[in-house]
Length: 115
Length: 113
Image 1: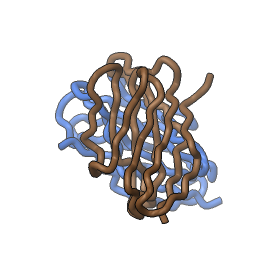
Image 2 (image 1 turned 135 degrees about the horizontal axis):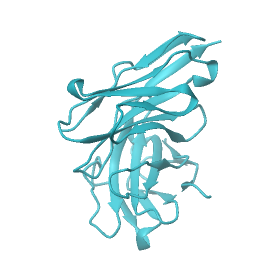
Image 3 (image 1 turned 90 degrees about the vertical axis):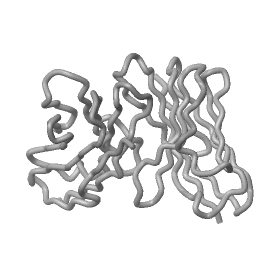
Image 4 (image 1 turned 135 degrees about the vertical axis):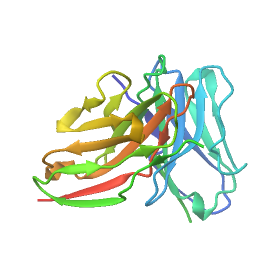
C-alpha cells in the first residue's frame, strides 16, 4: 500500500521567505510527527498530532514554525521568515497509535535549503 | 527530561566483523524500545522493536538487540556485518505513559568491503 509521502522533495528558498512543507500520512494513521534532521545531527522532534487532540508543539524551535493537520489527515509545516539555520531535511512520520505498540513509518523527507 | 544516548557517532568496520552499537535511555518507567535504520538514499525504516517478553529481540537482516532494564540499555548487535549494512542507525524510546518517541542522535556505520 501507499506509504507516507512528502512534498516537495527539495526546496530552495531565499532567507526571509516563507515555506510550506506537506505530509500525506498513511491512510487511517491517527498519529503524525514532524522531525528535523540537520547535517550531522539526529532526529529533532518538532510537533506531534494525535487524532483530534491538541498537538504537542514542544519541539518547535521558534514561533516562526507552525503546523496544522486538516481533517485528521494531511499536515502542513510552515516556516515563516526562513533563516539559513533552518536548512535541513524535514521528515514526517505516521503511526496507527494502537495502544503503545507504535511503529512509525517515515516519509522520504523534504530537503530545505535556505540561501 | 527523557533522553536517549548513542555512544558512537561513527563506526567503521570491515566485512565479517562483529557489531555492537550502544544505546542508553534515561526514563525509569516502562518503555518500548526501537532501532531504526536509514540506508543511503532511503527512508528511515524499522529494524526491530521491543515491547515486552523476551529481552533479546531479533530483527531483520540478522540484527538483534538486548534490553537490559537494570542498565537502561538496548544495544544493537550483529555477529558479522556486510557492506550492505552501511547506514545510519537510530535508537528510539517511547515511554508507555507518554505520547512521543525520543530518538538518539544516530550512529553512522560504514562497512569496508
